[in-house]
Length: 332
Length: 110
Image (cartoon, rainbow over all chains, first blue to last red):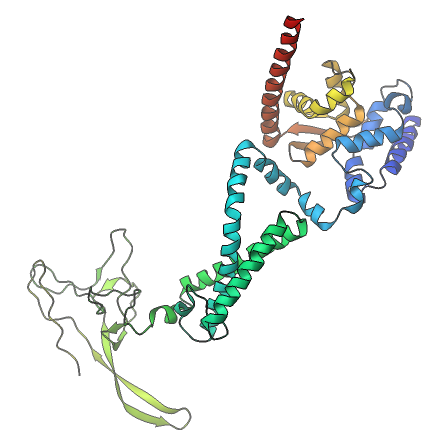
């Protein structure tokens, strides 16, 4: 810090400027004045009269500084609430500026028109997500809750709650246009609904609900290979054109994706597969599981004893298009 | 006509144009603007404008220490600043063209 006469004058001027800006949040003010001392020293070094003469009174200088820096005046800044703080957040401002371009404005108008539709959808999706979670926790099929959410044990409540949620969602949406807090509430609601929705979708995709989706009693299980008539394909037995069984064949689909989803049952009969290191290697070594009566275990009660019957590929077949493989004659 | 009012509206553009030539520190920008003919440009306005453009992400900044004088904070345009300048230049061109046409039409009528 300079101790020269000019330095002292600069510090006096700077202090006066700082005092005039003491209504600003300390952070904003310090940031604004960070380099001002160095700047004023530079001005003072020109040696043409006092700073007051060259720059005008400190109060006017302070005001000009604040206005050009885009900071709020003493009364504008008095009520800087959290809503204002968020709307002053720079990335948000930039996004707002982008939306203010002609293309952005057209996009906004279009979005405005779609908005009420989204409010309705948001209310419904919120209850739907809730319905899926509740239904699943009750051990019922998730399908039971789609598209009509099942809540408190009945569709009646699901529909009533959906209607109520839609009404609330629309109300929040309409208030949001007028009130900043309601706008934030609306944003939070949308975020919550999307978060819950995506997490449910994610769980569905991960198979957490799989038993409910697939084990619906129809015998239809889209996860596994099956014939057009719905009977499952538990194994694939490739033969060469001269009727020899090929082993260790790797199967891929048209995109090079390995085919690994052979069925885990043979038309309702439970099977066990030796788990190979490579999942798309065929034929698989599979066995029927047969339950051979009950054995009583004093610790855990009745246990089922399993025996396995190997299920080999059929004996040599005649090659040719459309020649069906004979049904294996093995079994108990 | 009070040129300080006119200047306020175009100071962003003027400051960016000066920095597009070469990086500069606060007082250097003031001097260059004055040398370019904008003699009434306010010292505080330039300083405040630099801080704001920096806050808005249009400028980069670095401090150059100096042996004898005060430290100098240099400012330069970053990509966002160059984009902003290009856009503002376009607006300025359209504006001056419209004003020129307007003033010429008035002259012709007189």
